[in-house]
Length: 155
Image (tube, rainbow, N blue to C red):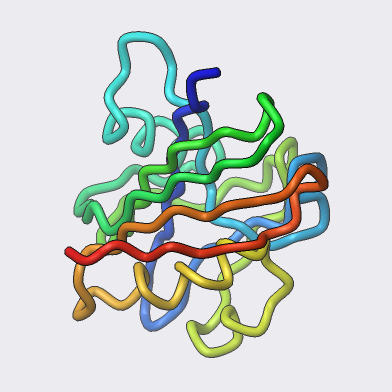
């Protein structure tokens, strides 16, 4: 099966990051970046901009492509290719729309201690720090979607 193409968008302001506590699967109850699946005819960049606006009400003005992550497993429904972005300038106010989850600004230090998906715990500190190089990795899961291996690629 071909991987599902998706984006994650970390939005930064004053040493804080905007995260969403998911209120549905996948990742129910975990803190994640806003984002979603790439639609037909859409580039990863266009998806990131659209998903950020839809899920947060924010309009990205300065966007950095920070990571590319493959997630694989023996299951056909768990094959992902994730394009990870960091937005450092934006317009608008955060919406209170909670269809996907609850949005909250967190200090970068506090965010690293929140319950996140296993892969996010690995790549979050690497992509959020704009001084670090572009991040590329493959995350391998077992049949029960437990992380069993992380293969980080040089850039």
